[in-house]
View (cartoon, rainbow, N blue to C red):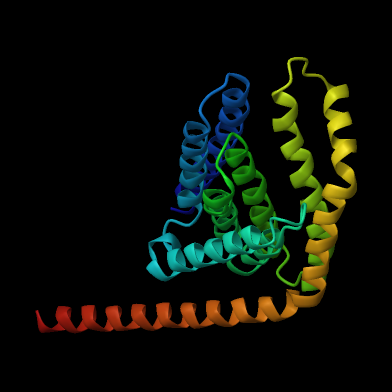
Length: 252
């Protein structure tokens, strides 16, 4: 029994990795061959969503968790749109980071992907949208994985994660910009990274790290409090269901 469960778990992990790899290949291949951005976004969202469902088959059935994802993505989208006039100030990155750290990697990835779609409804959709979905989704995923494998990781440690995530976001987006050029090579890519390093990527990293330093602990406590209440209600509902089932069986 344990061996069959272990084999099933390995198969699920293989499917998850394969789905994410195919999503990345579709993203790059579609951009190179001029696919419409919405087809790329739909494919990436579907493949990443499939990977997320495999990791959280039971939890994603909870409507309250889906509500949390939608609410956090909406807040992050509004936060990004409200400060769009200031170059590369991205409060959305902070909220995506905290979402993954508090609720787990799947929630963080989902909030990141939906934030890109939601905020661009106002700012304008384009080929950059699926790239932003993957970049922000990756930040939320990373924060969730850190907490999952290091349960006592301190909130202030997210300052370093936020800096790395912000620079990684910028350098990942530079791939999309360079793909649009006729002569794609490492020299062009490194030049793009150097040109965006200061002030754009540095501003993004500094603002995100500053938000973690100032608001990281309060936001984390708020999210943890809500998650604990949600888990307590879930356990209570399960107990009621088990009791009702036992009662109905005894009456039979």
